[in-house]
Length: 421
Image (tube, rainbow, N blue to C red):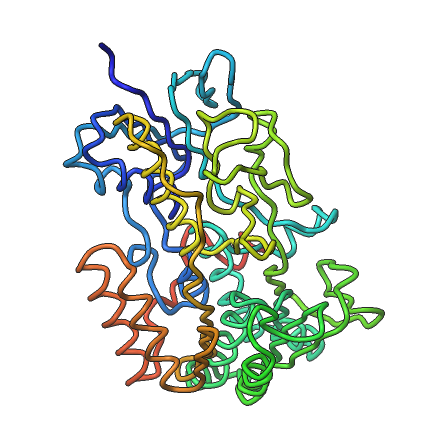
C-alpha cells in the first residue's frame, strides 16, 4: 500500500506547525514554499529598522527537517490546484499529487484599490521587504546629508508610516529613536533630531485592537519619542514627492505601508467561497466547505470565533490552527474520532514602543511601560527557533539597550545613491 500523501503549502507559522504536528503519522509529507526559509514575522520590523540582522529571524526550512525523512521540501511557487485530479500545480511546471492538502499561504499587502502605491510605499511581509525598507530609511539620511536645498532636505528627513496597528507603531517608534538617539553624532551637515516621523491612521486611534487606555498610552509614548500621530483622516494620494492626508499635502520621500493585508489567491485555486478580504471560508474543522480533504489555515482562512468575531491574523492563531489540523489529519489516518471543532485561545495583544516601553493586553490583565517591554521581549525570544537564535537576538537587544547603538545599519544589495535615484 502507498503511503498517504500530505501536501502543505506555505512555510510560515501555520504550515510549519502542521508539519511538526504530523511527526510520526507514517504519511509522506511535502512542504512547498517559494522561499527557502521560515520567517519570524513579528520581528521583521526590527530588520527593517536596523535592530537585527536577517539571519537572526529566519531559518532554512530544509535545516528544520533534515532529520525528518518523512518530509520533502520543495522550493517553488504554487500557481493553482486541480481539485478533481488532486494535484498542486507549480510555477516550474511540476504537479505534486496529494491525498490531503493544507493551504497555509498567508497574506500580502492590500492597497485598497490603489495598487500603484506599492512601489512608492512598500509594506513589510518578507525579508526582501525588510531590506528594501532598511535601504530606503538609511539612504534618506545619506541623501539629506548631501542635499543643498532646505526643502529637499526636509522632505528626505520626513518619514510617513501609514497604518497604526502593531507594525506601524513599532516602526514609527524605532525610526524616531534611530533619528533622535543613534544617528546624531554621525552626521555633519544635517541635524537628525529634526527628523519628522508621522504615524497616520484613518481610524480614530492607534492600536485599535487594544483597550482604549493602552491605545492612549501608546499614542502618548510615541509623541514623547517625537512621533507625530495623525488619526481620523486617511491618506488619499501618494506620489514620489509626498503624501496627501485628507486634503493636506506633506512633502515626504519615505513612505511605509502598514495599513492592510489581503489573503493569497488560495480560495481561487480551490474554487472556494471567500470573504471580502479574499480569505477562504472554512468549516468548524478548518477544512474547505466543499472539500474535506483540503484544509486552509492562517491569514488565508476566514475562521469565526464563538462570538462571531473573526480569528485575528496573527502568529499564535496560525500556530494553533496548524496544531489543530495536524490532530484532525492524524485522527483520520488512525481511523479515530475527529477532535472537537477548532476553538481559538487568544493569548493577548502585544506591541512595543521604542526600546523601553510596550503595551500588553491580556484581557483582564493589562500592562504598559518598562515591565511590559521586558515581558514582550521574553515572549518573543521564547518563540524563536533554536538556542542560537534566542541567544543572538537576546545579545543584540542587550547591546542596544546598554549602548544605544543599532547593530545592523548596513546598506546592501547594490544599494548606492545612484542605483536608488
